[in-house]
Length: 75
Ligand SMILES: [Zn+2]
Image (cartoon, rainbow, N blue to C red):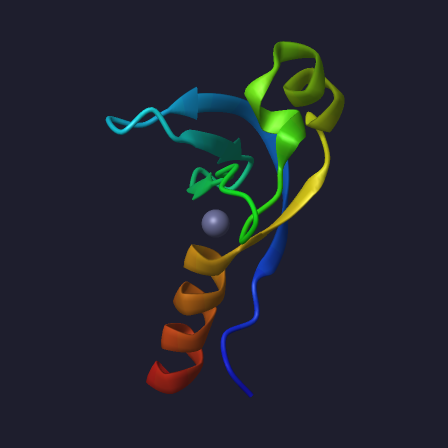
């Protein structure tokens, strides 16, 4: 199966200590949204208009997926 993210909405953006962009999700988790061509192409994240356009968009939260997996194992 592998890790499947849980769809969460982007409610804001911040930068980490390495100046990489991080999306703040409505579940309270943070998800990196790096722009590292050619591996990860997110040219929109490096400008304010692009980030504003992605507010409210859904991102797969790996932290939530891990949390759900833990809950299933504990049942
Ligand atoms: Zn989450």
